[in-house]
Structure formats: structure tokens, C-alpha cells
Length: 354
Ligand code: F0G
Image 1 (cartoon, rainbow, N blue to C red):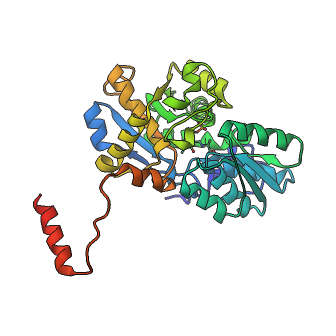
Image 2 (spheres, helix red, strand yellow):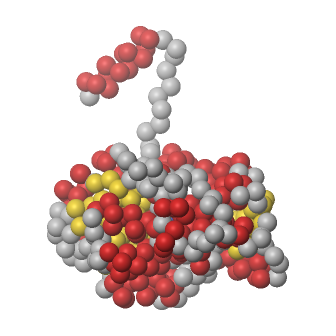
Image 3 (cartoon, helix red, strand yellow):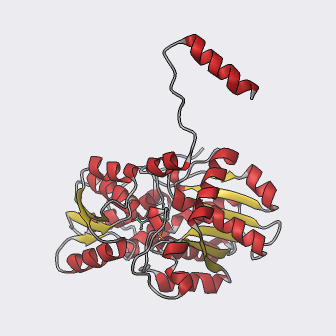
């Protein structure tokens, strides 16, 4: 097997990499594409999941961040800033540490998952929690970055999209061609934009074909579906708790050019998919990621995805990012027993019989 050298090295001919670009890497990318055996059979389609939680900080953000931080460093910047629902902040802080740079993150207070906060803290970011939502934080950091030499690394930074498009390249390489349908959660809409760009570029170069792009917002944050920004978005999937997606127009272009659809899924549907994926497939991705699975279920039922379709669902982040939602979801808690082998064995006998 050829040695994996990280995204900037691996895909440099497709990326804005030149002789002055630092070849930053935590060996991101090259994530697994896993077939869903049981859910595919149940639905009558052929689903693979792109497990982006296998990236170094546990989400797809590493793909965009390695590129954005490398370019910031190349341009002489020493500090990056971002607004975040959590994953962006973890990735920014990790890559900035690696590059010897400082990170400032602005997050909605109390609305980011514990694993993500722990990461940003450990990687050494300066964390500012505001009494506001992601959209308000993004407006702030956009303005601040314009008035200062600090580099903005949210997905409005075009280098983020460049890095993230590499996931589409990998999907084509892993499947041998593009799938019929790409199902993806939509928050700020950078990733759907990036995948579509990646599929188009790879198709131009290698004739790998183009998928229909099916994006899924959470019902309480479905601005694109409703056609208007949402001032106070709400969803259990805090990663996509976004009411005014920055890449709204690009997401609509991906949808329209690909003959796809952007739809919403309810929190109940997200949580049902979250449990189904762990119980029936052994795959633990964070709630927002399961919007893509919930969306596939919805569109197979409605006939918008045809029987027998080849589908790739993007699982954007690792389930361990959000332990609170996992624990809250499961009614059954660990059984506490005395420190006695007999008591433990008796209990097990009861379970095995049942
Ligand atoms: N899934 C996860 C796990 C995410 O963290 C995000 C976005 C998305 C999906 C949506 O991707 O914004 O490109 O449409 N998280 C950002 C953050 C907003 O700050 O970590 P998108």
C-alpha cells in the first residue's frame, strides 16, 4: 500500500499548494467508506458511509483546516479566528498549534458538545463564549478579521472549501465512480459546496460522473428549505444549529446543478437514525451526521431516492464528540452491583436467559 502523506501532499495538483506553502499535516483524510449492511437491505438501496469522524480531530473540518491554516501561515499570519458550533474550533486549534499559531474561537455559550469544548481547550485556543448563536458569532468574527491581521478560517475562507472537496475525490476513488446520490448534513452549507466542487473537478479530470446532491438541514434550523433565515435556530444536532448559512447560494447551486434536493429532518428522525446506526451497524457518529441517514430514510420512503440507488452518506463527526446527547438518549443506564463475582454472575444469568 502506498504511504498516505496527508491531504496537501496527496492532492497537491488539485489544491492551491505552491513551493511556499508549508506542508502542514496531521495525516488527515483517507477516511473509511463503510457499507451499511442492515439498513441498506431494509431500505432496498445500497448505502456506504464516509466516516469523517476518523480524521485526526474527529470531524471533516480537518480537511478544510489543514489547507486554510497552511495558507494563513504562508501569508505570514500568526493568529486564526473562527466562529463555531464546536468542530471547526477543535480543528482550527489543532492545526494552528501544529503550525505554531494562536487560535481564537467564538462559540454560542452552552450550545457546543462537551467533547468539542474539551478539544478546543486542550489544543490551547482562546475561547470566547457569547450569549448568542453561531450566526451572530460568525458575523462578529467576519467583521473582526476584516479590521485586524487575524485570519478568518470559517468556511467563507475559500481555502476551507478547497481542502474539503478532497472528500469527494476519495469517495470516487473508493467506489470507482461517483454514487447516484450523495447525502450530507447541511449547517453553514460549506461542506455541500465543497463536495459538489470536488465531484465536478474529478469528473472533469477522470470522468467519474456526478451524483445528485441531497442535503439535509435540521427542522428547527432549516433556513434553506424555508427560504428565509431563522433568527433563533434550535435542534438537538448542535453542530448544525445554524439559521443563516453563509454558503446558502452555493448550496442551492449544488442542488440545482445536480438535480438534487435540500430537505429537512426532524430531531426525532435524527435521534432514531443515531440509534439505528449504532445498534444495527456498529457505527457511532454524532447527531448532526445522522441527519444524512435520516434524510435517506425520508427520501427512500417518498420515492425521491429510487430502489437500488447507490448512495454515499457523509458522517461528518465522531459520536464521541457529544457524550451528553448519547447518554441522554439511552434510557438504560449501567447497572450498579456490589463488588462480588457471585452478584455479577447472577445478574448476567438473568440477562442471558431473558
Ligand atoms: N456535521 C458536523 C458534525 C458539523 O460540525 C457541521 C458544521 C456540519 C455537519 C455542517 O457542515 O456547516 O459545512 O454545512 N459545523 C460547523 C462548526 C458549523 O462550527 O463546527 P456545513
